Length: 456
Image (spheres, one colour):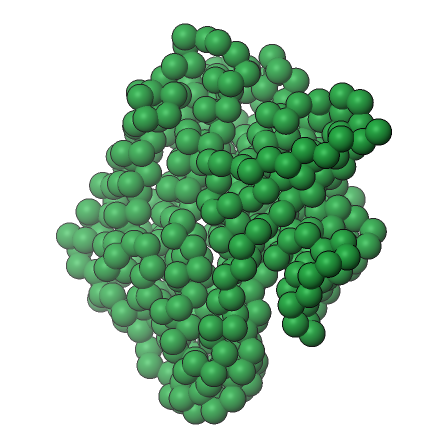
């Protein structure tokens, strides 16, 4: 007889319940339950369109800036579809990328040291791992310090973090001085040193040239990434946590990644093929429903009817990254590979941020006012960006400057949403077949859980 276990997951952003169905000593099925509804899409209805730039960054305290960028792009898309071309300055585009990357890097550092590594202390009693102990551990404390430094870059350009609203249709409202650019660069350099000395155990240039996992393991000094990799091999995490081996990325970012979908081969991404499914959600197109088999406030998201993972691993695969193509061939989309990809992105984003800052020309404009006031806008638009956890989509409909409909599809909805009639979500599939509750929690955390975005 099947045994049902309910686990309330801690050390995640928000709240997630995990319902495990056991048969013998294996997990036969898993249900990821997002228990709290928030309703930002409804809050936005009938608001002036520019209010969305203040409201959507408050969806999340960790990745709110990504929501700002997606909102900005959605409103700019309304202009574009209405035939009003915006001449967004290059300086503004660079600063938007710099601040978005800063938010992503701070998230990845905190996630690795506060969510991932402490789990291994539960797997084995090892004095060498004490440095990862929450609150007390040396590496844990360093991660808090440097992840906090990282978001100073957002504050330099945006005035604050979190919940900044400095990006608007037509550009950004900041005009940084040379001193402020140097200040931002100094912060980035300090975090690069932290990453080289602690996370990767080698200089940035050497790590970015690595194309084979064995080469990294051989050349890296004592590093936290190398410790993590060895722990994964020791406990079999190179073989568990596999989802569908399908990857989705909605945007491009210079030096970092390309948009696309990879099933067997890489193809172009088409937002028109994205569909939300509410068969198992409390929240439906026709209102709130309970009962039956519904179990989550999140919806399922499908691309051409299929579940896809969106994540830093997806970005690496759709970008044709040789290191992760090799890892995928050897270990598929396992816990090891998914987690390594998120850590890898720390260094790649820091490298890109340095390049972007060097391109900013303080003599050129940062904002060009649109020729049509937002209060006159009527139409629809889609804004997309790559956030810390994966692909983010905002869809907006506006009439005479007021929002008539707002729809948000977050990375966590892709990965952690409920099942549809045919398929469990990627994270639900990755948990099936495991032999312990702790491993189930760890695999779920490998997707970087954010329930507040999932149930926006």
